[in-house]
Length: 110
Length: 118
Image (cartoon, rainbow over all chains, first blue to last red; front, side, top):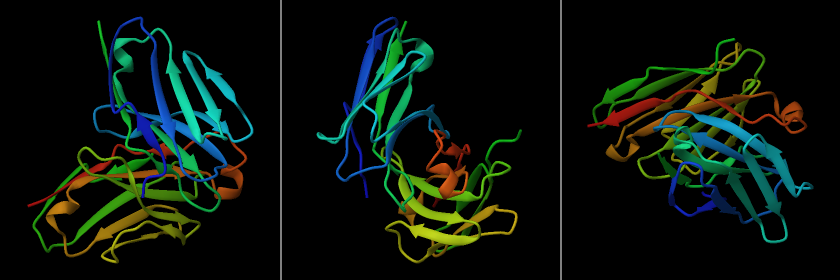
């Protein structure tokens, strides 16, 4: 079953632009995580935000979490061609494994 | 340090056969997770093992099974293969749950096994 739903499903931007992806989920969580997947290979963990945090930064990544709306956003600033990948949000509920959304496919063209 | 390793990389089976997929976690990780990623779909949770025990199971039929060995490596078995089982099977590992919940680490994924059922 899917817990998170990313929006949009696909996003195309130019190098240097910012990319924003959104994630909505259904039940209360301990934390929410974002992952990147290149070309159908393994996922790479990007950032984790806890349920009592509202915003977190890591390099060019900024994640926000609104638990009242059960939503999160991932902002990638100054996008590069190498950022082209699929991005997934995943929610951590107590006692279960991470539940992933269907992902947003980001295409950054030069 | 070696990452999460999965074998084989590709596997082609005939409908009705059995498939065995293997995963070795990062040293120090005791939790192993299996996910199925069919074309165009997100990751569907299959199984979670921690310290040799099955902790949680996703909404998959019983012909999907697995186990975790004393060295924390894991095996996923799929019996009576069906065409719709064709997918990328991803294994991930993490620290044991009590430690993982307090950390800022996520899962570490392997590169996956591409299973094709013909």
